[in-house]
Image 1 (cartoon, rainbow, N blue to C red):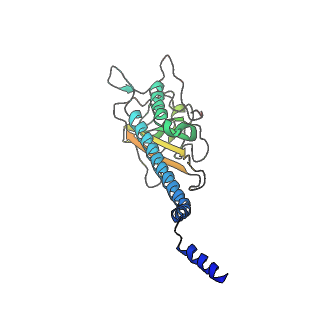
Image 2 (cartoon, rainbow, N blue to C red):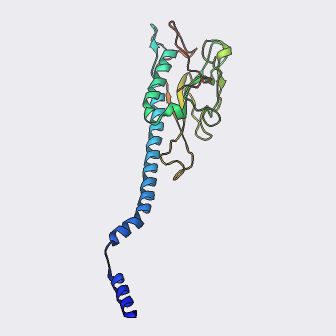
Length: 237
């Protein structure tokens, strides 16, 4: 009996059948975890690039649109802003940017309005798109009323921003007598594997570009047929 048991143990020790299957079964969980983590991080990096590019492109487009007048001065219209915001929507479709995020376009101007005694730097108006709302999604750098910039009166002057706009230490200011388009995008990253590899994460990017033309900064124009204003008290994808 002992001899038979000994022979069986020896045969078992030398039996190599199925070893590849066992090794594969032991390594699969590690491969799945490493592969899943790599896929999640890659997707997160791509989402960051898409949000950053959407912010930069929106600032670029908003800095150059408008209707030229006979005096070679450009009037920025609500329809122009709606067009560039629509471009941001389309650009962000792949990550559902306006469903899970918020885009804020601000006009930072350092000009002398008819009611000013000297040039004043202010956020003259803001326009927004996106369903996300609340702290961390609405503008982090100052807000204006829905009426700001809609006419050339002091009541629609907007919000003073003496130190410019942006994070402390990285603020940007408008050139004297001109303005810049400042874009802030906040987006809830949509994780592929839930909370397995990442906790809930918000992607935040800003971009700014100086207005490229001789723009009329007195107001945002809205000639007939008037366009709907994408003011920041509205939340739409």
